[in-house]
Amino acid sequence: MKLEGIHHVTAITGDAPGNVDFYARVLGLRMVKKTVNQDDPTVYHLFYADEKGSPGSDITFFEYPGAPRGRAGAGMVHRVVFRVASNEALTFWEERLTANGVDASLSGDSLVFEDPEGLGLELHALETEDDALVAEHPEIPAELAIQGFDGVRAYTNDPERSRKLLEETLGFSPTGDASWEVRGDKRGSFFVYDQSTERGLQGAGTVHHVAWADEMDEHDAWQKRVAQSEAHPTQIIDRFWFLSIYFREPSGVLFEIATLGPGFATDEDPAHLGEKLVLPPRFEHLRDQIERTVTPIRNPREDWAKADGGG
Ligand code: ZN
Image (cartoon, rainbow, N blue to C red):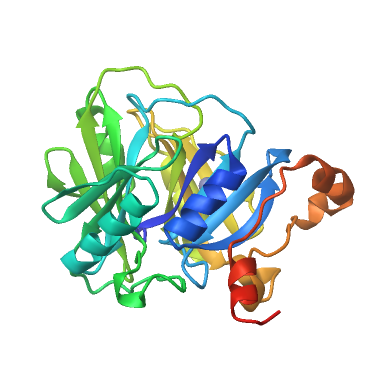
């Protein structure tokens, strides 16, 4: 039983319109699902990914309108690293980010920057056999586009606390003192700790949790396996587009294990993912109320259709 790298990363935004603009327009990801937080259906849960909404490419945001900025500290992911194909891609992104008012710093094969609310992001140029998980965008050539997650970096005051759970329970393979590879049959990601004793503060621009991918038919076994460790997993929760369990690893980072299926095309035409507000069936009766309360946001793809003269 192996985890197939990162499934998704979920963070917090206080500004849904600015968040859509940055991830869908500037970074060129596809907004594949516009829905509400299943634990608080008055606010958005926005999903950005490749063209198909693939696990491994999916960064999602809970919206808390006007939420003050947080700060990553011990027990929190502080940087989300995406793959790009080449150093040429890094040059392209350095120019594109700068043109959009984002400070980006290029060093070696990485470009490091923050989203508008201070979430740490990095583009890492590397060669890999893993599929390129790419979204279409009229200003971003496919060969330069973001290709999905490379990994995440978290803070801890003591990486050794987490080693047993990561290696023995979750099957992470050590690649250094505080770094691991999480690789399944199809795809892999890295997980790295950086040292920090600072207390974090959850808020806008911070990561809420990182989800690792598993196979549908192994989900139950993963829940049981984590339950036998020092962590305390939730029961299996049906998130409609995937099944999930959640637990905190010993350094404090909130982990989820989420199934590779059934996926985002379960309730929407793959050609029109993320265009309208989608509610899991158990929230459908609240639609009128939800649509009146949530912040209006625009998918930048609506503007491309106009520019093409299409509908
Ligand atoms: Zn999640």
